[in-house]
Image 1 (cartoon, rainbow, N blue to C red):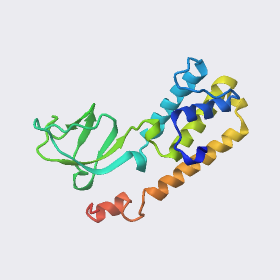
Image 2: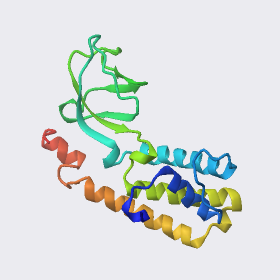
Image 3: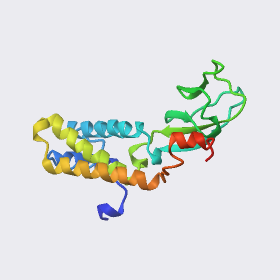
Image 4: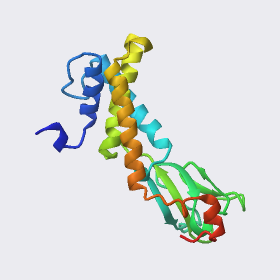
Length: 195
């Protein structure tokens, strides 16, 4: 089946990085070949680094989080960061591990649900194709820099990385449904935080 008809697997991303070095493709992520392991780890690192920023595809907005029987709000295990949203945006809370900390009461106890924007960490395979393509290309560039030196990075790869970056940002802008009036903090506060 052609590459463009299927989602990119992590093995395919590793092979993009290996091709950047002019090496033959791996048949499995379990290969003990050092370059395969290095490329695989690099893809994991870059996947995490990319998602820290928070994109439309890894952010759950305005999610109602309800306290458990102990009054604690437990966050998903893959939570990168949180921010209060909607009518709770002025509430002072912090992420502490997988729990929400109430900085106003200096405790983990909440007496009501809280609305949060959650930035979540996904595995490589769960990201959209445009993000996978960016990570795979960045891995190829970084692997070339590590092995051959920064001055020897292939011009095509550098151009491809710029192209992938542009496509990633275009995809984000298209899918995030941004609005100049309601996505502006100043206007948002004037409107009373209504969404």
